[in-house]
Image (cartoon, rainbow, N blue to C red; front, side, top):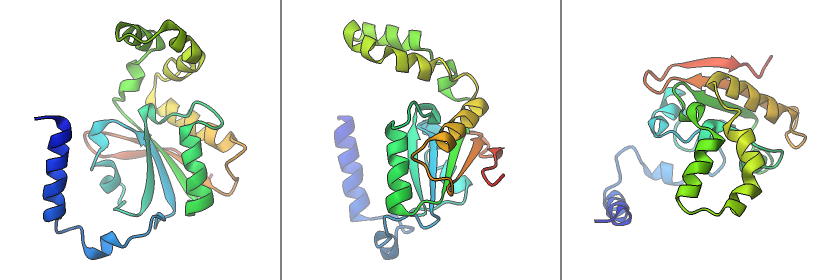
Length: 187
């Protein structure tokens, strides 16, 4: 059976018998994040159904933006565009950049990604178009805590993010669920 069919079957079962914790009230929840916060975090699978509960965040309470290594690569990259919608249309007043220990991005390099792309048939010309940004993104990430600090700073310095939005940095442990503050955005 295909992964697509597995997901479609799971969806049909879910819709026929939704879990008890998905009430009629949950279905009526607004698209506006009730806690007026946005989380920028890593796409690591270990964080799914773990990070938000560890922070006391439930369904409908926060906007969650996931990206490899929770980083930002430019003034108007996809993460910043998402934050702009969060702030200007959805009422977000605080941003939490949440890195995690044991992040796979710490071992990722532009050289390794380029080699893998070439092996999968990606044209050298296509790689050349993104090589500078790829190097800046993949080769700058070595330490999750430092990446959190750098990402918080990029958001704070972004001319499109208003000064009245607090930007915090946290580090999460994907085995224990413990969170430590790296940057307190109130200070």
